[in-house]
Image 1 (cartoon, one colour):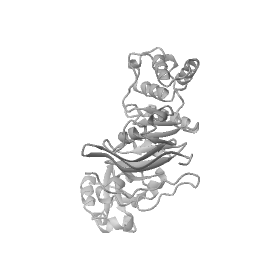
Image 2 (cartoon, one colour):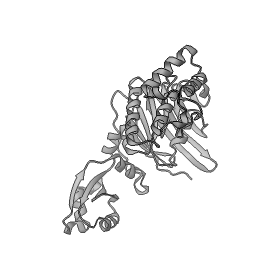
Image 3 (cartoon, helix red, strand yellow):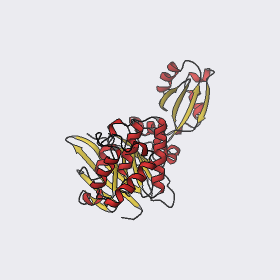
Image 4 (spheres, one colour):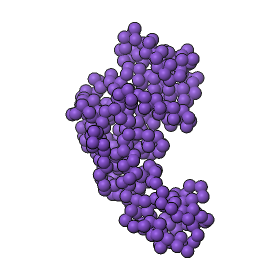
Length: 336
């Protein structure tokens, strides 16, 4: 496997009884990027991370992480990766300094390095004043930063973050992502799962997961550009009634209300979507204002995971020439 690739998985599958949690997943993740898993609860994000860290054994497929074959070389991998779980998993009855010291012993850090490295991380994540405070008494944002400090204490090459910001406020989420970009700039490859659209847009590359299947992947910008639909914003009265009418049109993929306007996803094959909507609905005889707008990642997600339109991602996603190609997937087979 090329040194430029951090993770490569082919046909990765994991079952729990008759339930297929991860279904023939292919991944090719470059080193030195932030790669995101976007999907709702039950989409297979956490199970995939456990497979990629060696904590779970796949039922089928192959996994190569940092040049190591899993699960055979899982023990060798664990010293080279960091893992921040979705639920805060540090010891609440230990202080911050004690938690860091405990993690340092697990990773076998030399005793002479522990205090220096702990002080460095406590300062970086603005936790120096809390170093003697019990972890249970921290706020949500402080717990999050402590967990990140512990996950990066041994300076891992690859960092796994499972919905790390699900319990913190927007300000702390923004600050947390600044820290991730600092880590990435220093050479750390990061895989992060999320169900927040704004976080997904921050990733260099992104995979959209649904029921254990990868529906598409690529850069957020390319996914939006190649979504196979256009977005029309409709402004005017009686939006609830209008929404139900538009949903009956075969060329309309979804309609969402945002305050005093509707956001309508129309098939790209409809030509002029504004004229098409007016010609096929009561909008033609109304004073509603219609305008084409830029797609969002939420529009991509809705298009990609809609049962009727899973085949919409038919165009290859273009990736920069200096990075390995990451292409959309066309597998629309559901488990079961």
